[in-house]
Image: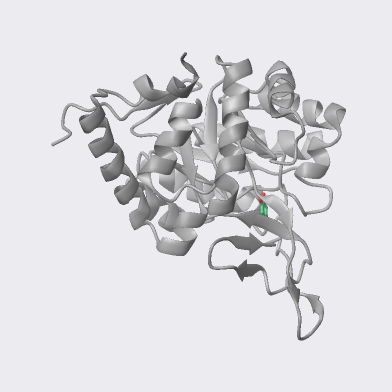
Length: 306
Ligand code: DHB
């Protein structure tokens, strides 16, 4: 069953065997973990955001499990660009489609990381949306000149497609996406976590060591879906990766219908394990067969047709 279905998609020139991508921040620090995700069926994997220098991250606790969602405040822990190079070489040797997420607090840092990894990956994702690490992510995005400069430098430093990961806090996602494409982005990843916090009523203090963190999981889905729909409506030619609260095949299909060409899965992997890739793919294939779709590409943006 499903032998004639074409699950592949092309995203900004990168061919993916299926539209499911391991979202940044989950299991994305070692080749061994990313290889397991690839073997579990993901069409591509995205690394944890990489900075020029290694970072230890925030003090514990770094995650609050709400049951229906997570708040995390990792603080961008990563091995630094030199520390990820060996992992990328191993992944390349195994034929894994890898996207490197770059976090930078300056155009120079972005350029350094992007130029070092671009020969070792299939695409570069610029994290312009981490909601709580000072000097990084959303703080860069709020300064349009700085954001444009960061993306422009990555564009020039990298021979690979450049994806820009947007924040759900942006008041005009389509306008921002258009600005990023003018600055050199080939695609947008929509979106990242929402800035959040939790308070312990007994200690009467913030729970997270870093105080603020990013909310992820199912509560984000309908916000992100709306952003994907808005961006596709205004800019149907810009490839979009939908990320936010995908747990089931139906969530993934909703994103495709809204206009995403690929769909990131993150919190569901953290909560339920890497088996979610196989589960979502199986459900998607059954849906395609019962609805008469021969390829995933046929479904992209269908919710917009009159
Ligand atoms: C972190 C980074 C992110 O981009 C995000 O959305 C949430 C958390 C972090 O490393 O703290």
